[in-house]
Length: 77
Image (cartoon, rainbow, N blue to C red; front, top):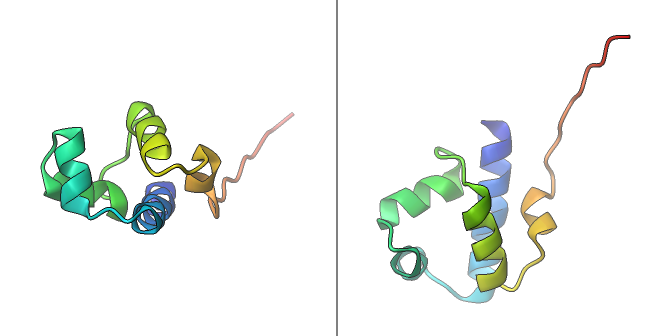
């Protein structure tokens, strides 16, 4: 869930830079504002479609949503 929190915080920052309120974005997406809020807090994991849509809506490269994400991979040979 740590990745979801980081991605959500980055999406929130992009939304604010773009000048949108959560309720406005929720209306555009045709979802409840509480559900959208849960994406930004990392309580719900956002799907690929919404990430691409929000990237375009906020005029933000999608890779910015993943800034600060740390992934550890343990490979055994």
